[in-house]
Each structure stands twice: as C-alpha cells, then as structure tokens.
Image (tube, rainbow, N blue to C red):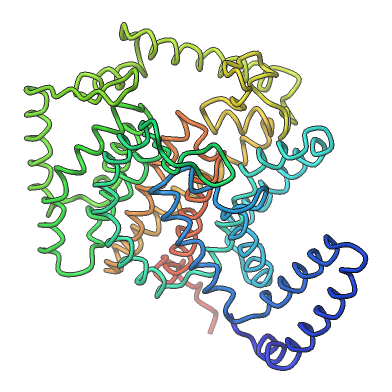
Length: 483
C-alpha cells in the first residue's frame, strides 16, 4: 500500500531520519548500550513502517516460519536469542503492517478479534508484575491474533495464486517427512538447538495431523497447479503415503488422527470430490489390507504404530478401552475440564477468569510434571474460559462460528457465480481451520507458536479471501424510487 505520502517520506525524509537516529544512537551509547539498542529499534521500526518493502518482507518472513513450524515443530520456535525468537520477529512486522493499514475498512469479525485481544490484554496486564514472562507467554493465545489482522489487509488475489506453487512443492516432502521425523525424534543422540536443551526435531502427532489435513484438502480442492487430470493422478499416487503418515501420527496421538480425518471430511463435504473416487477407493483398499495384515511398528513409546492402536485411540474418546494410559489420560482431562466449568460458569471466576500468568495446572491442582511445565488443560476452548472468563469464551465462540459461517457463505456465493478458484481456496482454508480446531480440543495447540501462528495465519487468509469475494455476495434489490 504505497500512498503518495509514503512515497514522499521514503524518498526525502528516510535518509534524514536514518542520519538523525545514527547520531542520537551514537550519543546514547555513552549513557547506556541498552538505550542505544532501544533507539535503534525505534528508528528501524519507523523506517520499516513507511517502506514499500514492508508487506513483502512480512509475507516472506511469515512463509518461512510457517514452513519451519510445519516440518520441525516446536524446535523451530527456539531459533533466535531469548526472549526474541523468529516468531516474535515476524510478529513485530505484523504489528507494523497492521498499524500501517489501520485506516482501512475492517470486517465485523476483524473488529471482534480486536475486542478479543483487548479483553485478553486486560486479563494479562495485572499479572505481569507477579508472573513476569509467564504472563506474556500465556498471552500469545490472544497476541498471535495480530497475524490474522495483518494478513487480512495485506494478502490480495495474486498472493493466493503465488501460494499454490510453494505449498504444492512442499506437500510430497512433508508427507514423506512425517514418518521419518517420528522415528528421528526418538533417537537418543539428536543435536540440540544451540543454547538450549531442545532437540532439532520434535514430533507431535497432533501438529502433524493438522498439516496432513491441509495437504489432502489442498489436493481434494483441486488447487494443485496444472491440469485437473494430472492433479487427480497425483493425489491417487500420494494417497498411500498419506495414509501411512496418518497411521503414524494417529497411532501416537489421538488429536493427530482426528485432525487429519476432520480435514479430509471437511474438504470432501464442502467440495464433493467427484473426480477423486479413485483415490478414495485406493484408501479403502489400503485400510482393509492393513487391517488384515495388522503391521506393528515399535518406535520406542508406550503406543505402537498399528491399526489396532488407531482403533483404540478412536474408541478411547468415548469409552473405556482397557488401555490404562489412554483411559487415565481421558479421565484426568475430563475431571480438570469439569472443575474449570465449575469455577467459571458457576463460580467466582465467571466474569474475569484466572488471567494470563497463573499456572492453571498448579492452581487447579492438576500438575503432573515434576518441572511444573504443564500450564493449561489440553483444550484451548476451556483455556480461554479459565483465563478470560465467560466474556472471553463468548467472544471466542462468536469468532469461531462467525468465521466458519462466513467462509462457507463465501464458498456458496462464489460457486453460484462460477468463481471456481475461490471455491477451491475456501474449501482448503475451511478444512485446514476445522482440523486445527479439532486438534486444539485435545492439545494446547494454540498456546505455542508452532500452532498459534499457523491458526491465526489461516484465519487471516480466510478474511482476505472473504474480502476478495465480497463482489460475489448477493445484494438486496434497490427499492424503486417514485417517478
């Protein structure tokens, strides 16, 4: 968004501001190095704010970290220097992009995001003094929503076209990577991220299930560049490997299994896969074969990769399975979730919640980690309720239902208008978003950068797509004026 003012500022005042910042910064070094660093950051932010390169820099940086989070999970989040990591660096760019476009007309749901963030900030500030960095880390649950706002006003149609190529290029590599990384992450001698005790690869079945859902939805929606026939052949060829990867992720994590299946189902529901019956037939045949052969792979964990484990994981959500670990985990979470409902819906934290900063596991009496690393229940929706009270939960639910409804309405309007490209984009984003909501119901997926940034990025792309498709929205007929 290169306005005449921005162009004039960039051409005439930028050198002056840079020189002034250098002089002031050099003088500040004599007083305090930290003052000089602060001045340098302020000057750098001011220059970026009016630079025509800011949107491209933000989108490029975001694309890189999204790919890193998808492949390497939480370990990629530790790149940087504490407490400033790669996610926070790109988050700063999202703040500048949002400020630069603040005068733009916002969608109603985007205003709801702003309200949700304001309430989250109000429930964080009182606890910074007592809980310090923990309050800020917990606050990313609402803070990462800045990515949605920044993407919504930055992404245009041509960006959606550009996304297809890189994403399609990465799909085969990612599907193959899932099984490999599962075995690699349990090796005893993996290198560590410099300056940390975190290995370079961390495998989480739930996170992998989400991106497996996004991959298959991309293929079902027909977004693969090239002819439909070539895309149909490709998905048929990739499906066996995709099913194996889902089997690995689903055996090791219930959330990963249900996320992948939810993404597939959502894409098939919103866009009937008439051209993909061959792929579904292959899937049924492979699953039947696996059920007969019943392969069993021990990856060094309590759960094995097998058809029997997948069936047990699915059943454990609704009933006792005889697997002590699965049943105990389910009962533990259900007790904790009931306690959260009690002290919010019918207790003293109805309006405010417990805020961001307090360790909910310690405060609620459900800490099971010797290092106290468990901080929240494995359900982001209930975390919102526990930390932000009923007002926060109401805004959260309105935002989630509103986004889903708006995206489906945009899909239907574009289908009526014959805008096939947008139908495919809507189907892909809808399936990705559904998979994330499913996973975050089993895991604190949105409380970390590898999940939270991805989630809000998908919502931001959804808002940008909805805005681009408003031209197809049906308008009420204009009332006739008297002659």
